[in-house]
Amino acid sequence: MHDQWSFQTKLIHNKHKVDPTTGAVSVAIQQASTFHQQTLDESPEFDYSRSGNPTRKALEEAIAELEGGVRGFAFASGMAAISTAFLLLSSGDHVLVTEDVYGGTYRIVADVLSRFGIEYTFVDMTDLDAVKANIRPNTKVIYIETPSNPLLKVTDIRAIVQLAKENGCLTFVDNTFMTPALQRPLDLGADIVLHSATKFLAGHSDCLAGLAVVKDEKLGEELYKLQNAFGAVLGPHDCWLVLRGLKTLHVRLDQSVKTASQLAEFLKKHPAIKKVYYPGLHDHPGSDIHLRQSVNGGAVLSFELEDEKAVKILADHVQLPVFAVSLGAVESILSYPAKMSHAAMPKEERIKRGITDGLLRLSVGLENFEDLKNDLESGLSTVLAYQ
Ligand SMILES: *Cc1c(COP(=O)(O)O)cnc(C)c1O
Image (cartoon, rainbow, N blue to C red; front, side):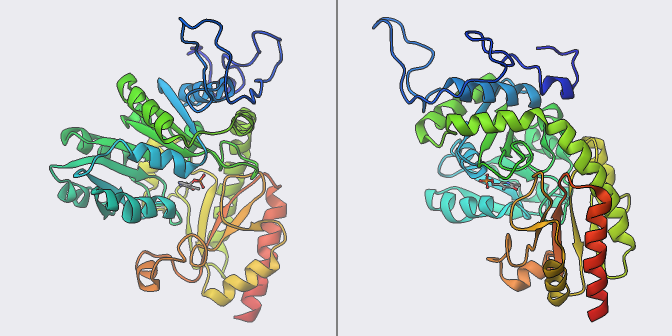
């Protein structure tokens, strides 16, 4: 609906902007597990909150509209959304997964689905020939994440979708880093968009949530059945928090992206920094493809210092970013992949993938650019003083 409106306006004016029974300008938190049934003969829209809840419905409709899909689903976490989508597979199926996939997704594919007879191959999705070479007759899903974590490698969504279609596979895209504000995989032909709504969509480091969106009704029916069967649904209060976060998604991203690209330029020139990874920089290897499928470089960048000692000095010195896992929040978040997201990976594997002991990831929040720059600059000059 409201096709004439921009994304920015749609974030505020969806069909749930006014409660039809009370006029409240906020979706009601329907904290109920069950619903009274007026007659035995009719099945009501809501009967039990695992199957459906009015607050969850508002969020599911909102994300479906924003991603350009027909149906959305809200889950207890990003991993619950991703895991439930994988339940579309059956024993004997094969899934092709991007090699720098989120750690939790790696775990569900390699450690859990494999026990149920689902085969997998991890492949560098920036290499389309490698993708082609690894598609098997039983490949059912190609799973991508772009830009990826933590090196912001870019996968050509259109090219993967084309390969998937030629081979009768579905394409799943984890759109957590970009959000529908910056990248809309369904418009590019993908079948399922997945989100850790814990990150930019909710945006305030205060709730875990996951979302899935499809643009095909039949696939939507199948996913609904799995959501209800598996039961990892998002509670009404957390649905409300995500809805609340969504309203400011555009302004939050606008600000964070602007600061992120300024910081990328600043960091690139700093003598303590060996390398900056940001898909909005023109010397980033995937920037051409990225800027064809996304609005801009996003709000996450990574940079490489000399070694672990330099990382420790910087982390001890900076005052603004919180030092933590996660991303996509109002506060800037500095993460250390070698000891956080990729701690479980053997060091050799990790270094081979470019995730060195000097690599840091910065998710840029809403602080003032000069304040962030000064904070980082002061930390980096301490790093230089010790080198
Ligand atoms: C955080 C994250 C997930 C997992 O989401 P949770 O909400 O933590 O379960 C999946 N994919 C990406 C890219 C993420 O950053």
